[in-house]
Image (cartoon, rainbow, N blue to C red):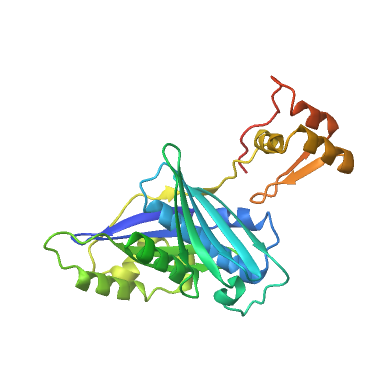
Length: 290
C-alpha cells in the first residue's frame, strides 16, 4: 500500500473520519536523523496526527504542528502542506529513556498549531499540554481551541506510522447526534495498533464499522518533501549583514548550514560569501524535493 490518507463519512450523521498510513514518508524522516527509540515513536505519531488534521481543513497552504517543552524532549515539529507533502524534525538532549511517559519527557509544555495559507494571514493556536499521549494532546487542543469533538488513535514503529481520526461537526438543527457519536467512537476505540499499521482503509473500516453506513472517498497520496534550497539559505545569511558574514568566513574559512528537517548541507566559502552582497548575481539553486 502506498502512503495515503482516506477520508470517510458516516451517512446521515454529522460525523466524519480519516485514516492515514505512512511508510516511505516516515522512512524518509528516519533516514535523515538518528532519533532515539522513544522519540521515533512520538514523532511518528505526531506526523500521522498532522496529516489527519490537515485533511480536516479547507486550507491552501501549510499546517505546522509543534510540541514544545522544557524537558529532555524540547521540541517536535511537523509541517504538512495541503498537497499532503510533509517534513518533520525534533530537538532533544541526552539519552531519552524508552519507558518514560510523554509528559515527563516534554516537561512543562504547550501544543502549538500554526496555519500558513499561501494567501492571507497566518493563524496560530496555543494550548497547554493535556494528556499523556499525542492523541490526547491533539484531542484536547481541538476541544479547547476549535470546540470540535475529536478523537484520534495513533501508532508508530520503525517501519510505519498510522492513525485514525473521528470528528463530530457542529450540531445541526433538530438533530440529536449524541447517540451516534457515542456509538461510533466506542466502535473506533476497539481498533488495534497493528490494524492501523497493516490493514487497508477499506478493510479497517469494515472491521470496525460493518454495521454503519460508511462512505469512503478516493485516497490522497502523501510524500516527504523539504523545500529548503541554497537560494533560501543565502537569503537568510544576507539578513546577518555583510560585516557579520565576513567575520564568520574569516574565523571558519567557510559557513556551513544544515537544514534541520532534511539534514541537507549547504556550504559557503569566501567567494560565495562575497557574492551574497553583489547585486544582480543570483545564488544557484532552487527548490529541492528529496
